[in-house]
Length: 426
Ligand SMILES: [Zn+2]
Image (cartoon, rainbow, N blue to C red):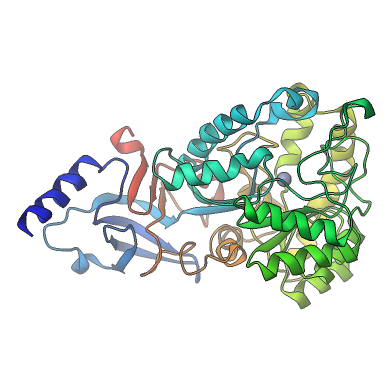
């Protein structure tokens, strides 16, 4: 037994930069994201599995332990983005995207996973990737080989023939359709079973038209209520939640009626849609920052001219409807659609949300406790409390006074392992 103890000690030393070891962090202030309270001089203690075992004042520092010193900083739980596309870069949209191979998509994913976790996002829900590259990325991160956030992944998004989640760039003679295309209630059930078979934790479906697709309109419905209901039933039966891309007023309502768990984009939601979302407990995810990027950089990145035109019409409505839905008390989770704009800039959406009427604490809750609830991980992530993962970030200053400081995270820990520590040059 003595030898075993010695081995464990050596392992902890050798693996300290990648794997977790028991330890503690000393926070100058710690934000309780449930209450919005900033508590001074807090210690967070975690075990070798990277799980928090205690949070409290200095009296709880384990004997012999030297906490990581963040006494000049404010600590928060690791942030969560519920709408990312890690395996895609902005330049992969439009015709250039046709030249991206499956292996390259995986490599892009590894690069962006690192950027995302270093930006303080220790968990993401990745909703739409080709070739199950997201499944491989999730597994690679979990095996410890590549730095990245905890991932919940969907594989290819389900969509109708010719819809937002098909690929409509090539003429008929190429007979090309995207991997997630399925039409009719039984075909969509089979497609749900297929994505689950190949590793999906969540099912993504395109209920309405979209911005970056050729030949469709964001406001028009694509899947019918019958198809959406079949998808939701099949996914729920298999223990998976469903995220529905829905810009259009009708599709938002159809998806909520179908029992889908979150509405992505939510751009043209009306009062009836907001009331329905509240009644059904459906989360709304408004990706209101990326509009700025698409309009400024989209054409250079290779987005189709029609996509830029669609965004011009849609962006303002989405922001106004975000404000209205927030004021109406709808449940909201933080999702950015990173991939449409550069990864690692996930936190830029906080200030847009605040600019459009949200209180900073509510924006932070959207990216912590609400996001954790939506993805089904509220007992694992989203708060710094005993029993949760030691996923912790630290910033200089008070994010409740200036939410923009979340764009400059200087310390990131995931499961007790330090991912980033600017003070130590890491
Ligand atoms: Zn998306």
